[in-house]
Image (cartoon, rainbow, N blue to C red; front, side, top):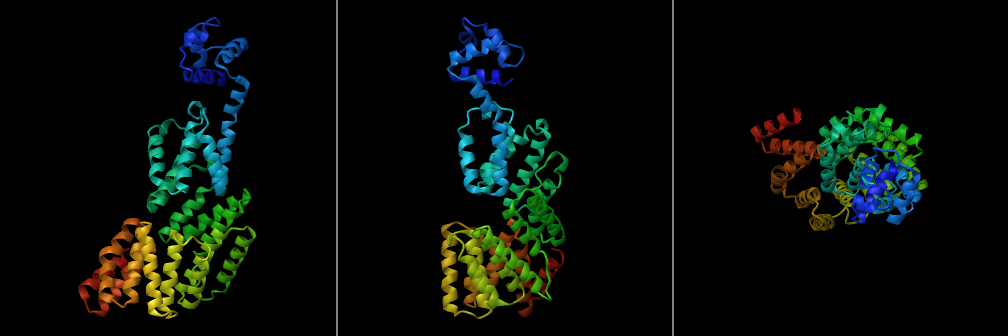
Length: 406
């Protein structure tokens, strides 16, 4: 089976016809049948053909057989989010000469799409996804479900959360042993503010990550679970869970995850109007992030807003921070943060009319386009309160209708 594919690969690479390769060994017709796996053949013939092609057929066969093992290893490091190993394997596989002739070509392409999504290259990933969708009916059951998983992750990257839920829930677990997709389902439900379902699937993903001893991803799942619990009364239990996660991040030497935990803890304090603690933890989160990255800008926005509402810093300092954030957002072409920092600049300068006009005409349409549910709800409430205060009854009623039916 493997020998025929390898002979054909090297024959074509050397630009030989079947007759030229077989001269003095066997007929071109016999080589054609060997390459198409339609005949039995003597080992001596394969040896002679290999010598003419200048290859060691045993080594080449071993490499082709090991391809599935290497692809499985790549998928494992992708699941574990071991970026150095992930990149190294990607580079190796890009040089692998047998990928295109192997029976694992679709598995490779799907994992490549997943790899691209992890590197924020969704436009390149969707090209691969669309290519494979054309022959979806021919895919093996595992590959078919992997396609759904990768497509679901793509929808998440585009904030198309309902589409992500639909495709991820169509995965058949009996044909797909990678239960990591539960985590992505949890993320999708969290994004549409469905805490019960988000908690349910995050817990299922946590169990899977524990089974495969993937402790970094256990942290991810537990973080997702914690932020679904809205205990607006006694906050002690939630704080304790956050502290345990922070310790876990330190033990695992995971500063990037620690930054996320600190950010989410800051938001929980902000939600409870404890602006001093919120600003403190936003600041701690920022210290673990690249100051030109999206996650840094998100924490900076939270730090400025909590400091403003808690009157913790002078207006001129806050405005300077907001302008620096806006400058970075423009430089990096980060549309979300361009809107958020523009809003902060108006807010800090007490330009209420400009703030709400920008919120209504620029920011809210963008939040809706990309499905930022929390920001959509916050914006609608702000506009409702603003219209009510100005006694603009019709606009206030319109916004109230939107809030009720959102």
